[in-house]
Image 1: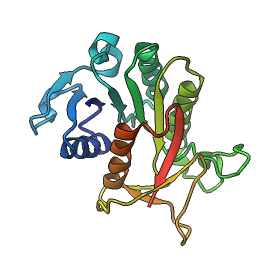
Image 2 (image 1 turned 60 degrees about the horizontal axis):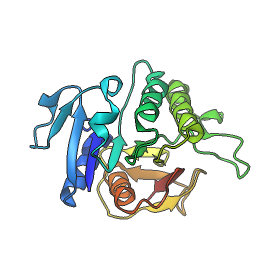
Image 3 (image 1 turned 120 degrees about the horizontal axis):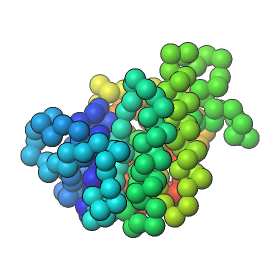
Image 4 (image 1 turned 180 degrees about the horizontal axis):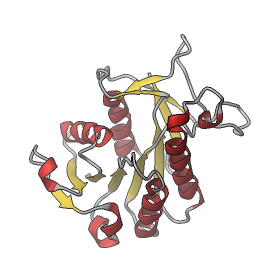
Length: 207
């Protein structure tokens, strides 16, 4: 299986890259600066807006692990670009999503980012990522999956090899905690790459 990871030098992207290579997948990193990939992984040096259908046509899966901490509107612009180049293509798009767009009610009317205790500093980011999901849900003839982490997404947490699959509602463990490490999230993402268990869906994972 041929997999490309867009944003492979970021925290989530590098964790997914490591897990995919460990499983023997044929992986290419797509990054703006090839010098940042130092483990021998083949590199395509491009940003998302210069990426073309021809660039990704040979890949079975394209993982978008892009992160934008300045202009968060890039989440919608970059998602639309990926939709444009992947429409009517066999390549599946898997997106590293956010927890802020998860629902907190069974009726799916209130997202986590809209609750009173959600940190103000993260609301613009969560809202922008949610709009990216809205674009995917409205897209036609694109093979996509959007994977949201738990509310606490821990870059330093260990890989336990265990996670719980949930749906579009914020899920917690028996103690009411919503947590997953980047390492275990990466395991879940690569499982989805291999199994394609959630086509054209958003799902989430927690510990």
